[in-house]
Length: 311
Image (cartoon, rainbow, N blue to C red; front, side, top):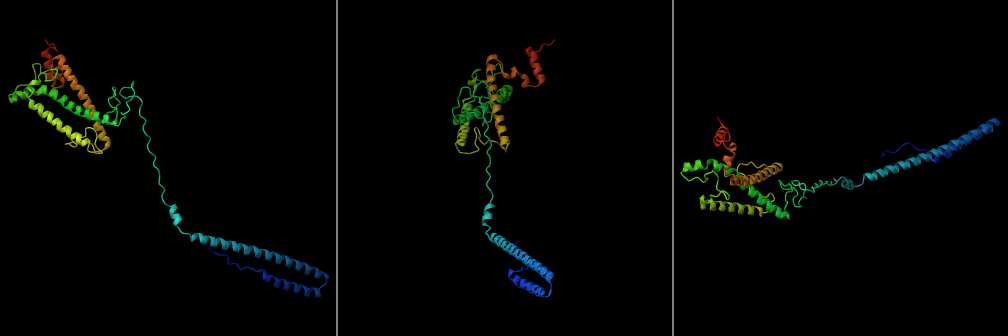
């Protein structure tokens, strides 16, 4: 666009001289030739006039084309002189709005009891939350957290009791005989309990130690729960001496779910131990020896007790 057409233009002022020269020549010819030559000269003059008109028209159109071309060149030059700042503004990145994930729709009915409506505060955010609250104890989020704290504490204590109850029936007499002490089991090999009796055999120092240890752990847990730690959840005492607690969130939730499930099962098991021994008057280990003794010894006990008849 910046090149200009350099073709030389024929200005209209040049044409009168050319026209006058052509007319003078034809006038001279008219004086010497005949009438035929005169008519030919007139026709030639007309042709010269027509040629002159055509040249004038071409010259005007060429001049107009040159003016438009120069005007467009100037316009392009002016656009190139514009400041690039507006273009820079247009090149700025546009902020993208991220779409939020849709909020999951909570079920209307309880997962654990499909014939009952799901409690409002049981949203499934806690591991093991299946909407089980038939009596409506949890009225708010704070109530739910308090009940989860209590559930985790009872679950951990029940897991210790579910393991300690049968182990004491297996090893109590052996350990007491080795240390020269009186066994705590009764005549039917049952552990001391509220239903079985025999709690008077336990030293008061043992109860004092248990209460002191439980109080210290509970006080420490309360301080952690009120410390404002964002990573805290009910039952999180920071106790992981073997480093088995996962580092990723998915693994942590799985571990919490496994703990609460095993704790709930342990609470049912301990309750079952107490009822079973109170009703049958037989220790749990003697009632189900195949869970705690080798198979051969179990078969011998069944034989001696009459479960297996022999010839």
